[in-house]
Amino acid sequence: MANQSFPSYDYPSDVHTLSHEGKTILLIGTAHISQESIDLVETVISQEKPDCVCIELDEKRYASLTQKKKWQSLDLKQIIKDKQLSTLMINLLMASYQKRLGGQLGVKPGAELLAAANTATANDIPIALCDRDVRITLRRAWKSTSFFKKGYLLATIFASLFDSTEISEEKLAEMKQKDVLADLMDEMGTALPDVKRVLIDERDIYLSEKIKEAPGKRLVAVVGAGHVSGIKTVFQQDLSTGMDIITAIPPVSKIWKTIGWSIPLLIIGSILTIGIQKGMDAAWANLLYWILANSIPTAIGGMLALANPLTIIGAFLAAPVTSLTPVIGAGYVAAFIQVMRTPPVVKEFETAGNDMRTVKGWWKNKLLRVFLVFLFTGLGSSVGTYVGGYEIIKNLIS
Image (cartoon, rainbow, N blue to C red; front, top):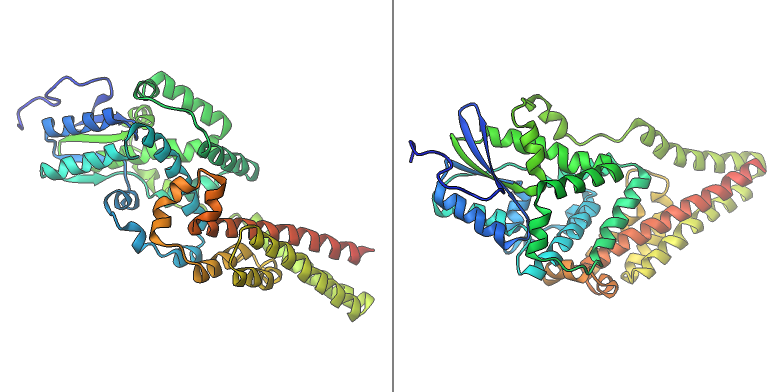
């Protein structure tokens, strides 16, 4: 086999041949919900028996595809403590969208990536997980997006859940064509340039460098079709020195840190100043207004989410305090209490992707209700901070 040409067979246009420093790489562009892609991946790996199979997966995504009992090991309380609840929600939203499309075709999202791993294992071929940690990707995308673009992005993702457009293998074949994908990438780059840079461009570089690092001279790399053009563009460049940059999570800007701490200092300082200027009765009245202005809308948010009664009480008590610190928000406190009092069962983790496609499902599923508690109480706290702060500043200067 070592003297045999590589590739050994003629393959469709989804298979691209790349070379780098004595290595030959068969780059397969796939659709993540296509049976055709599964068949192609299995055929190429089985026929070529490369030295290594590179796959567009990171450790977390690989585990989610291979571990049937993944939800049993998920510590939701720790996720909330680490402030990763929003990341989990975005992951579920995107997975739900892919699962809906895959369901129309009877194909599990990412099945071709799992097929690549299984085929390699069956042929005693090492695999290399070449994608960037999905948590880093999502956090970099979120931090690089402006406030208004964040709203647009979330609205787009939520809208996709309720999109009933049917898709066929013929449509998938069309989507995998270079010109169509180029148009899609250009459109995304125009509407959400920072998101496109993080989700696509940076990962093109990361995937390219990791594929070049993989052991062996004859490699098969399986990636989504949307990455093929970018990988081919950067493949002959040495971009390894920039890997540290694109695997780092940008720190919170000093401006936002300053704003985050200036608001509580402004509120506390204003109440103290009112006490000095107008007496302690006025100070206590403004402090009470701050407490109620924060507690009431936060508790109402919990009620709208149909939270556990103790969650609502906890949110009511926590809101005035959490609004005076940027370290933790009322939404995280409420979500943690909700998980403690009404923990989701494993089945609800498994059905969350389907349940989030209906309005009723968000309230019925206990995991999704945790998200609602997090969102609604957080929104209520934000409203309370604005209303309470406005009233206190107005009383200070009047």
